[in-house]
Amino acid sequence: MDYDISKPHEECGVFGIYSDGGTLPAYAAYNGLLALQHRGQESCGIAVCDRGVISYSKDMGLVTEAFNDKILDDLVGQMAVGHVRYSTAGGSVRENAQPLVMRYIKGTLAIAHNGNLTNAYELRHELEHRGCIFQTTIDTEVIAYIIARERVDSPSIEEAVRRALPKIQGSYSLVVMSPQKLIAARDPHGFRPLCIGRLDNSYVFASETCALDACGAEYVRDVEPGEIVVVDSNGLRSIKDPVNVKKSLCVFEYIYFARTDSIIDGISVYEARKQAGRMLARQKPVDADMVIGVPESGIDAAIGYSEESGIPFQKGIVKNTYIGRTFIKPSQSERERSVRIKLNALSRCVKGKRIVMLDDSIVRGTTSAHIVTMLKDAGATEVHLRISSPPFLWPCYYGTDIPSKDDLIACHHSIEEIGKMSFADSIDFLHLDNLPEMAGECKGFCDACFSGKYPAPVPDYLIANKNYDYCTPIKRF
Image (cartoon, rainbow, N blue to C red; front, side, top):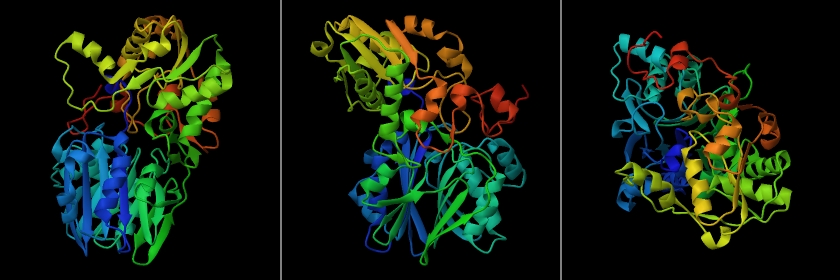
């Protein structure tokens, strides 16, 4: 089990910029996508609008693989929309890369989407029976069709977006580009993050503030749940209908998804992770010689654990950041060694030491066992495993790649059993009741993958089959 693929993944990251002429939108989007690369490594794309004409380039692979100076120089325009993708709905193929660019009766639009629609099948089924022909297998195309349909009878593109959004359910942070306007929208629950930045007289939208920093923009605020923000030649304005649902930002943004230097809905990701470590130190103290973190998100929690416990923090594990996505593991023994290719113990640091090791989550349990074994093989006398999230007990339907219960180790084993299976000398997970303290002043978050309390409706067929392909006819379970 490759360390990276044994972790939950988020679907994607979005970026958009409306330039006043002093900033090259394609290059700003490129820099922003580099900062958002952690949110998706399967494919990426940039679309630009040049005086009403939209062109684009997208491909499989990383941002640095898909773009070069020649491609970016050819993407001339006054606006740009960018996207990095990890697939949770629709296959990992080039036609599913975003942004999607659609030409319809009112012109052209480009759309980038982060999230998952829970009613994607019903909407697609309806559209297909009205004669729509789909070119992809992603739910983003469903959103684009609905916006295009609403635009036919709407006075403006923003009004078409406003009419379309109540028809879709689930999670979405969107950036939509028309020939004259750039629009950002966030679902009423606010499942996925989306923020606004300003670069001189240009406006920027991004999934995380680290992307604003990367292109030199100053953070202004977050797009609020249920809000539509429009930028055009007249500046920035907001459209917001009353929202009667509880805000439910995915709490895993703070635990794992977001980059350490990002601010999500006003909360520092770094401070949230340190706080999780502090609480773990209070929950189940242990005598040890050093605290280490599993790179990268486990390091922040380890620092917090060290500060609270007084046990020194050291760098006990090194991560190889240069392993490509195509790393091949032809045999089972090679697959088991893949953790040591990605991660390696600092043997001189850990030898003879009692270690507290912080990691952000355990999904299937195989990776934890490999890392603990690696540390003990390097000479650690004890390894005490501390996890900065509660146990995963429920799948996610809002865009996080958390598998069905069949594949979640905590659904079949007690915490003590998980510790033994991981070869740890002790184990503890962050208590569910401590999540609000970890998230600080976040005014509402979704913890359904830990609690089973889903804030938005989930169709029965999705509950019966987490990996249901919404592009095929519904199977009645």
